[in-house]
Amino acid sequence: MSSAYAGQVSNSDKITPDLKAVMKNANDQQKIPIYIVFNNQLTLQDFDYISYDTPKKERRQIVIDRLIRHADNTQRNIRNYLTTQQSMNRVEVGEILWIVNTIVLSSDVQTINDLAENFSEIKYINYDAQYPIEMLYDEPQSRPPFWTAVPEKF
Image (cartoon, rainbow, N blue to C red):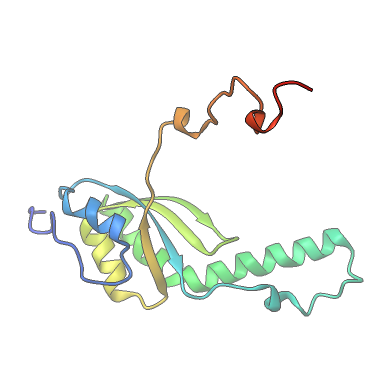
């Protein structure tokens, strides 16, 4: 594959500005961590048919099954496409997040552009910034929160 695609970013509104910025600096072989969010999302109203008399475990299983089926149906075309791209070493599929109808993966620039331009079921594609684990911890505090709001003398 030539470097013809490196730095070429689709004008598609489906690619978020953060991802476009990363794509401009990527080379042909670089896989960018992204996630794909789909147009068709389930809402609470999609579960109105479940009776409140249904036992909690059964309701939970009904919701889980429905979310998984929905993700399978709405993501089918994209998953098939990603499988072909994976065989060409252009993507690495991470996770299928059925609860929010999203796919997490790493992909090259050409595949991201193809996804944005050719699949109407995609709402947007976003850069999945990777942070060191240390940055995810809260800062240790020497004083409890709101310490300054407490009077000096009781």
